[in-house]
Length: 121
Image 1 (cartoon, rainbow, N blue to C red):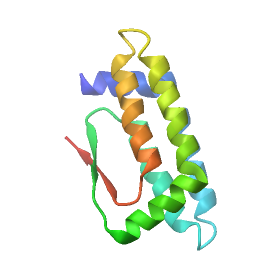
Image 2: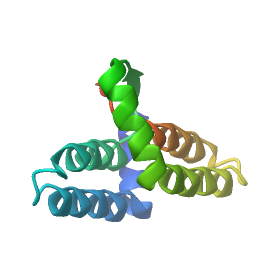
Image 3: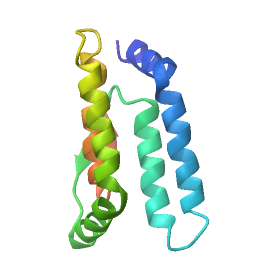
Image 4: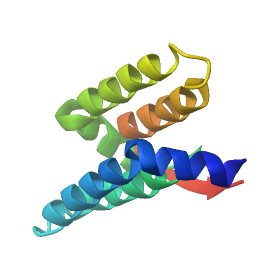
């Protein structure tokens, strides 16, 4: 079921969003100061490409918390808000509920990416 869900996710827009995240990551990695942000964008691209069968494990320390605060202020709030909106739209139909749940998982990661690890189940 995980494979079928990931294929449907990719066909219905996951590939386009993952490519967008990867391009953002490449642009951010051009400068030295943007590399930590670019790495988080690559993390989002990986989860966005195939979210089913993966979970996010949160950890980190003070450095991750400080980086997350900066991230939230700069871009994280708006990215998370867009994923929440997509999740709500997906949850309107019964068929879209699993896709909505994945959008909510990505919203949390978009809000607080530093110190998070993506783990396969």
